[in-house]
Image 1 (spheres, rainbow, N blue to C red):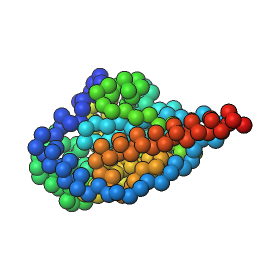
Image 2 (tube, rainbow, N blue to C red):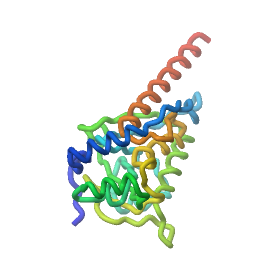
Image 3 (cartoon, rainbow, N blue to C red):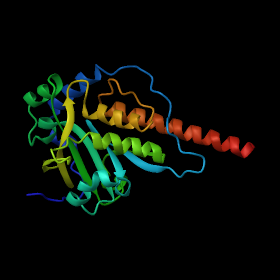
Image 4 (tube, rainbow, N blue to C red):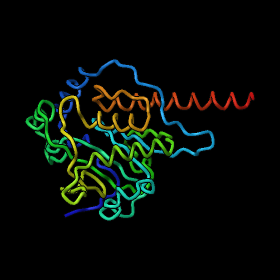
Length: 243
């Protein structure tokens, strides 16, 4: 039965220690050294940017967006996960992500063979830093244009049925959440974390989209992007003051 539990259940608890370590070590071998681009779609001088959030759950990352931004293309979420102030989105391997028990077979399959994907959506009643109090949460300020690009990418990550609507499969991992059939295949170099990197890149955030495979890589690059944004904002303010 579908239950809305309070708070989060860290995703790390769904992995055995040995499997988790092997997975992280293997993926780390493939991290590239390319340099990300600079910020795109920055807010105009009179525009008030909107906050989105990148959340780290150990081996996995997700993106949190305020619910009032989603618009008509996400109406199904307002019906199936009502009373949300924010929604967390994650993408990953269907068998690995939804499994109640992680086995070595699932791990190997998720890494070495293209597999079906799912979207994981969580309804958050409170702000992400409070709801995910045990997780790393990084806030990014995006322009309206950047938000639109981000939401287009997230919406395209849901597979659509013959009626053009996403299909939910089973209750999610924690809180009020659902799994939905995802678009695209999961494989060694196309992971849950590289999906987050692609979504951020689509929104104009400077982050590598090639071989960004681990949560730590996503979070460190997101923090670097935030530092660059704050630096640019500070320099812009200084210039205006001088003028």
